[in-house]
Image (cartoon, protein in one colour):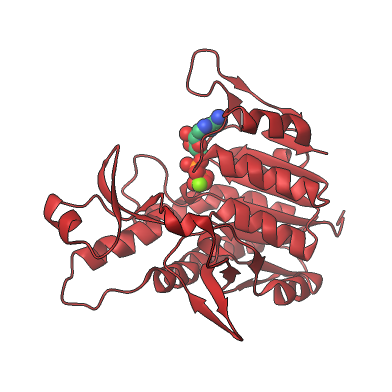
Length: 309
Ligand code: ADP
Ligand code: MG
C-alpha cells in the first residue's frame, strides 16, 4: 500500500563502479540493475528522491583533461554538472526499465534535475583543501599543477575543499515534483557548489559531500525516511579489525558519542553518520546506512545500521 511517505535514497559511487572494476559504461549500467530493481518496488510505496555520488566519474573526466593539454581545462563545477547529466541518464534508463518490468500502473515519471548546493565563501574548509580527486599525478604534473596537490596513499593527487552545504537551490522545484509523484534524481555529486554573490550564484572549485547534501535536502523538502546505500553492511565499531561489530540499531545520542570518540573516519563513514544525525535531529523518522542488496529491508528498518531518535 502506498504510504505517501517520502524516501530519499543516497547512492554511493560504488552503485555504479564496484571495487576492482575498470568502470566501463557497460559495467556501470549492469551494476545499477540490482539496486534499481529494488527502487522500482519501493516506488509503489513511497514518494522517491534519489541522490548519488560522482567521485569515479569526475575522476574519469579529470583524467581525460590531464591527457589532453590542447583543450582548455574545464572547472570543477562544470565537471560536476556533466556528471549529474551522465549519471542521471544512467539511473533513469535502468530504473525506467525496472519499472516497466514491474508493470507499474500508472507508470511513474522520472526526472533528473541539475542541482546547486550553496556554500559559505568563508567556510574554513576553503583554507585547507582535503578531499583528493582525479588521477594520480606524475611528479612533473604535480609540480606544474595550477591547483593544490597532496601526497596520498596512492600517490600525488589534486585536493579540493569540501565545504558544508547550507541549502539546495532547487528545493522548491524538487518538493513540487515529488508531490506530483515524479521520481526525482538530484543533488548528484553533492550538488554543483555555488556561493551567492548578491543576486547571482557563482560556481566554486570545491566538492560537496553527497551524504551531507542529501541530509540538507531531506530536511528542506520534508523527507520521512533517509537511506544511504554503500558497499558495506552498515557502520561498524572497530572496523577492519578482528573485533569489528556491526551496529544494527542506534539512537542519535549513541551515534553522536561514537562519532566524537573517532569511531568513524572523515571522508567515508564519518559524514554518513553525521548526515543521519542531522536528518533525525531535523525531524526525520528513520535513517539507515545499508548495502546495495538490502535496500528494501533496510528501508523498513530490518537491515543495515538504523538510526532513530
Ligand atoms: P560511498 O561511495 O558509498 O560514499 P565511501 O567509500 O565514502 O562510500 O564510504 C564507505 C566506506 O567506508 C566503506 O567501503 C568502508 O571501507 C569505509 N569505512 C570506514 N570506516 C568504517 C566503519 N566504521 N564502518 C563501516 N565502513 C567503514
Ligand atoms: Mg563517500
